[in-house]
Figure 1 (cartoon, rainbow, N blue to C red):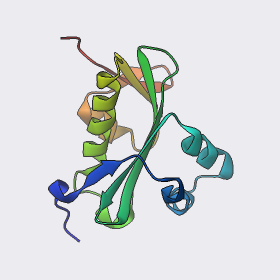
Figure 2: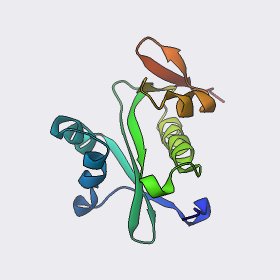
Figure 3: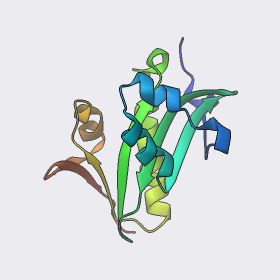
Length: 131
């Protein structure tokens, strides 16, 4: 299915909308799912009523946001949605006064480095430029 990014909306999930099955399908265990569920910022990407992506982010300090990851359903991958959601997360961090967004290095690191994240220890970091 071809994706039109303009049709995608990103929301805070309602209490009954957390896509636990999506995380389970990607191999997340119960502890990981609980971290995502309890994150300070959880956003889901939807087309109409269908959830097609999720990201979760915490704010360990006033200037640092930690992005737990971005998951896109398999049928919507390789169409720019993951990149768009990472950009959304960066925008949220910046709007809340953040100066850095970090994420753990994983097998999907290339998507983050293509956006501008750089290695920082075990993490990748995106530095926001103040105006």
